[in-house]
Image (tube, rainbow, N blue to C red; front, side, top):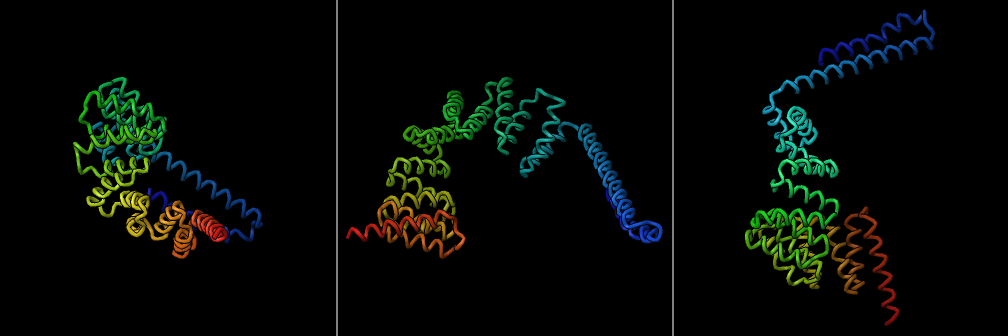
Length: 321
């Protein structure tokens, strides 16, 4: 490949000299045509070379042992090179379509890359071969969850738990599915079961806090969120939800401190301003929104709109005095 490109480069560099020598015999228009003709020929030659190289690579892959293809697919999956991973796994399936374990991994790649229709098809094929494969049921449930098909997701996760009631991942996902479906108390019940098995599960602690936040039960939300923060002090999601719980309790200085740990400073002041606004403290809200804009003049339009709304409310309140 390197030698081929060097030869092409040498030919391109020689063109101006050749054209200069012929300048006395050719018109500018004929020279341009000759140049375009040569460039087209070079492009065609390069394309043909790439085609041959791809064909050789494919032949090499087809002749590669399956265990080598699988190892390369696994390494690519671990390094998040999903395209290469998929190519290797698909080649294994082409040669051996009954490898349900490889088909499951293909489904996972599709799931990770947001190709839900393809992921669903692969997991369905796996479950036709291995209906008892709990990982495939969980993965199919995650596809339904991403597609907001919550009843189907709940059904898959429950099916897993019917076979293995101690499976923490499935119970956590069931809690999320209930939460997304607006069934807060059922979500809380499932997440509490997870935490009885694994008290330090940060993801479940945070999700439990979210469930209480959606119920506006801020005091109960604080308990799991503070535990999560103690385990992961710098976790952005934990601190953001902790800030929401504290702001809901009107503990604004503490809320600001948590919001500041959940992202940039401008975002933190905007978040706090929203809670001041909800509480009817329009002057404090306006100060927060203005602070957000001062910190970052290109802050998103929401902060500007929030500031305008707060000032309008403040003016109305002052007129009523």
